[in-house]
Picture 1 (tube, helix red, strand yellow):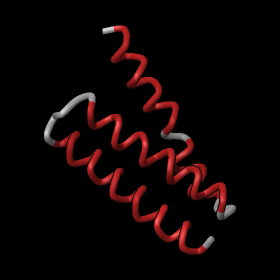
Picture 2 (cartoon, helix red, strand yellow):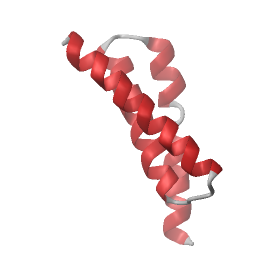
Picture 3 (spheres, one colour):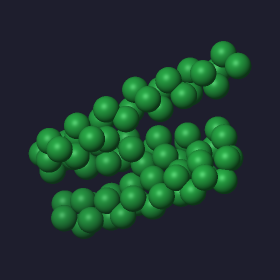
Picture 4 (cartoon, one colour):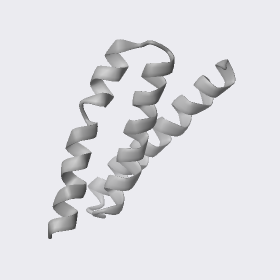
Length: 75
């Protein structure tokens, strides 16, 4: 389980950073995919490690990305 937790954190961090880079390069909507999936992985990590601050921080970002996907669908 420790190996999963360690790798999950690194994968999630990589995805979030790629999403931030793509946002700065104005590559929409692919930035939402990378950053959003990284946020979901971080939230899952917070859940499996019982880390409430991580779950709150990243969990509250999920509706924001859902709003971004919704706006992408209606435009």
